[in-house]
Length: 205
Image 1 (cartoon, one colour):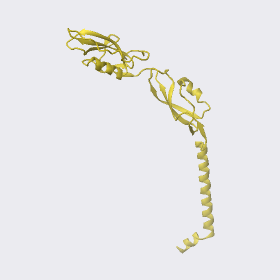
Image 2 (spheres, rainbow, N blue to C red; image 1 turned 180 degrees about the vertical axis):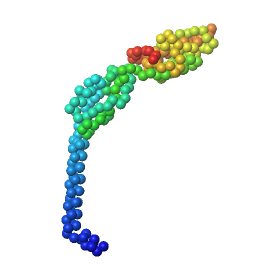
Image 3 (cartoon, rainbow, N blue to C red; image 1 turned 90 degrees about the vertical axis):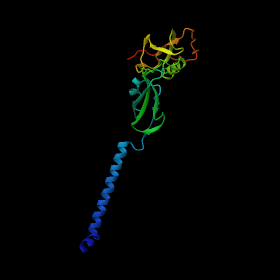
Image 4 (cartoon, rainbow, N blue to C red; image 1 turned 180 degrees about the horizontal axis):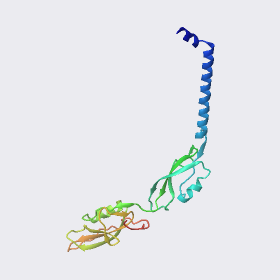
């Protein structure tokens, strides 16, 4: 034990210990330098403005801009041109590290499919409200003799009955057949029901 303690206090041990410690410091310093080079530490790039760019133009657009992009979602908006960027994260002109991934939201080229709700047996006003809330458009309202007054007897798409749960494109026009009794029934004033935007390609898939 005394010999071991004497060795720890010897000049030879202290010399070897200092050399090992210095070597460790040098190795750690080199590793940090290499890591900084690999991650471009201290180097930043300005996020370009992707908004309004077409999807087909993105690869060329990011050349020499030191960023990457990833489309993570598509949103259907009939008021916007299809296939363009409408949102990005991070925002334009933000400072980010080189090769940072920029997440993009683009407009869909096709309207989404929605399950048709059940309008039959509902009142006309309820049915018109549901048509609007589901993103459809009001079509024609036709009266037929029925046991109910002002209730929906049939729900139609392109002249054919459509069942609840059937997939149909958002923005499609839904026609309603409204029941009336023999004493007559006046359809409610639905002139304020919205009919905005162009009709999408209307087809059940």
